[in-house]
Image (cartoon, rainbow, N blue to C red; front, side, top):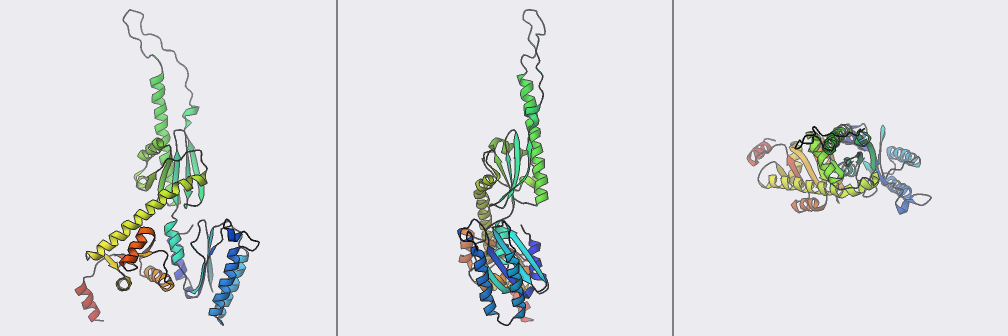
Length: 370
């Protein structure tokens, strides 16, 4: 969908301070988009007209508005969301397979927060569906599905010739060697199945590396899924966030729907852990900061490793300014919701994890010399 490099290009390109940012909910499944003129087109025209009124006489904006309207008139994809960024010297368009929380339009520096929310919330997940005979590899953004491959166990095609075991002797008391072939058949079946699970695990590793995903869900038959997990390379095994019972006969879109709650629960738990860690660091005098004022000072000193903000960000000034300042200072950004978002609000609206700590007396001395 997009990656962090896309974000940095938006703030570093020529004319970045004259960016027209448009976020549009173009999902054809939405009721307001069923009309002959979809609702998102009407919303975009009205929003651009309002922006034009705010920037009356700005020839650069007028030109960007014309380009935006021409670009939107050509839009024909089946995306759920559309993010459009126009500058006097360039254009970046992201057709999003996931929905936007709301449409928005702005002019000036690029509006990054909605894009960063999508980047964080809708990380691609690899879902491996497996039973004893076949497997499927599906990638999804927890809303859309793509088949990435499949693999079958060749045991059902294996040729097992019938054999008759004869007694090893005819004398009274002699033992019968062999008996039935059941043990040999079972051993061969188990060997094929183990090899099949190893092949599935290896294919999962290749797909994970190719797609650069950091989340893996194992589904299908739970016994088979756990067997595959046992065979996974460490680089894949540590990315497994859930083992889920999902029938192999359901289609790819249904697989993603059934797996979504586990991915969302994992994301919410991860966010709470991040917030708690940063708050604990700050309150113990460690590598943490709480509140906008303290974090602003840390950003100036390039101390911030990770800035954590609640989503949605209600204050538009903070929503547009703070992410840009954090990126310019080399920090990563995490937008959190649910319980994690509530904890950030209670802590002062923003928390951060720092690269290093400057003790108060050192900071005071440095300020006195300025």
